[in-house]
Every structure is written in structure tokens, then in C-alpha cells.
Image (cartoon, rainbow, N blue to C red):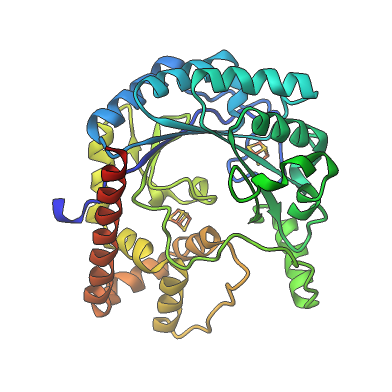
Length: 357
Ligand code: SF4
Ligand code: SF4
């Protein structure tokens, strides 16, 4: 099996399911009442265990929920990871950036602990809970502190707020030269989890109103989020990815980090051809294959988030059965594609290692 493994390059700690917001379509259904979280000791143990198992891990991503609810523990875990030689990224809704001064002081403390990148999530649903000005204060402070700053704006056909509104905000004018260098503002496809949101979106779809006139991040067919991350949630569950639908898809869970070593859990997934297929060709192709075999009409998934297509495969037992019965037809092609991707990974990894020497 060793010849199939692709070592992880990052560790993702979903440190808590507590959030200061309660967005209707939050993929993890986070809210202020939720108390699940990893302790500082647990976070440190997972970092140590991961870097000892894989020298390929270079980045720690801390997300949630809202990781800033960890208070000073956030600074401590960043310092700990930095001392282990890792780059660090936090993902936040920016609730703490209530004024330019508060924003600056909070980011400064994290930069001093070693933080290398900050990601903000915003958009219509987020803005119900976190004022837009917070994002502006947080972004400008992060740029003043020379931090790589990414803003991910949730977008769908229902959206009113767009990435362009942020890009053209006069308060960001003096940072325009940093766009695409230190500052990245993306539109990320927002996925409906509520039935009512899905119905609203479908209505717009049927009306053929094309209100989604903003640029979405490059559309990919294959799932490149697999086989690069050890992802651990606040209940110590290790998942194959941080995909939006992970909560609803038990197939993507690997097991408990409290019961098994991380290395064992991570490497176990390479025994599963379906995961290799998702990585090599992506869920859209697999779903089409399935429906074709079941003599069902194809679904138009062109406007779907990749993780939504992925869930569509797994929520029907019959699909899995069909895949089991027919996968031998495409097995060698998929494995060939996989080995080429794997080769590319090692080539890139070697190049990067040489650059860093
Ligand atoms: S801010 Fe993010 S984590 Fe919090 S409720 Fe909204 S989507 Fe969920
Ligand atoms: S497509 Fe599936 S495997 Fe890939 S990130 Fe989304 S949920 Fe995870």
C-alpha cells in the first residue's frame, strides 16, 4: 500500500464548533451555545504527533466554528506550531475586529506569536452577525502588519453582497497594489443546507435569472482537497477533508484520534479505491458514471459546489452498490491518472524542498 500514499502537507484543527454567529446555512451548524472544543494540550499533542509522523507537514490551519473564541489559547497554539517550524493560518468571521484599534491589537498579538496568514469569511449570511466594518478593520490591520490576507465571500444566486464591494471600498484603496500578492478576495460558492434556501435557489434557477455575475474561484472537477490534510474536529474525529458536507457524510470520517494514531488513520484511506477516484477524477464524473449505469438521466450539477455533488453520491446506498458492481471497468484508467498525480506531487515536493535548502 505504501506505493499509493501521498503524505499530507497540512494539519487542520477544527478547534471548536462554538461560533459567535449562527449562519443559517453553516455547514457545521455552529452557534454560540455549542461548547465542543479541543483543549490547548490536545491541540499541542496533535501537532506534535503529526509533525513527528510526517516531515511533509508545513502548515497548520486553525478553523472552527470561530477559533478566536479560544482567546489567548489561540496565540499559544500558534506559537507552539511556529516553534515546530510550521506556517500558520487562522480562519475567522472577524467578530473581534470591533474598531480599527481593537482589530490591530488582536492581529498584532497573533503576528507576534508567529501567524503567517489570516482568512476571513463574510457574505450575506455572515453579515447578519458580523458587521461589514469589522471585515474592513480586520483586513486593513492585517495588511498593515504584513500578513497574507484572504477574504472568502459566500456567493450564490441569492447574494446581495459581492467581493467587488469589498475590493472597491475606499478604505482599501491604499492597499490595491497588494491585490493578488498579499490580499486575496474570492467568491466562494455558498452551499444550501436548509431546505428553504435550496428551494429559493432552485426557483431562481428555473427562472433562468443569471444574477451570479461575479467570479467564483476556479472551478475544478477533481477533488484536490483529498490526500493533503490531516483534519481533526473538536470531537477528535479525523476526517478525509474539510469539505462542506463532511458532517452529513459518514463515509468521509476515518476514526477517532483518541483511539488510533493519526498516521494509521491517515494512511488507511489509501486502501479505498473510491477515495482515490474522487481525488483523481472528482465527484461529478463518479455521479455521472453511477447515473448512467442506473439508467437514470444526468443531473445538471454545473452550478453545484463540488462537495454537494459528493454528498449526492453518498446519500443514496444504491449508488454505492452500483459503483461496487461496476468499478472494475474504469479501475486501470483511474489508477493510471492517480499515479501521474502522485508523481507530480513528489516532483513538486522535491522542488520546494530544494528551494528551501
Ligand atoms: S461564521 Fe462560519 S462557522 Fe460561524 S456560523 Fe457562520 S458559517 Fe458557521
Ligand atoms: S468533494 Fe467530497 S471528498 Fe472532496 S472536499 Fe468535498 S466532501 Fe470532501
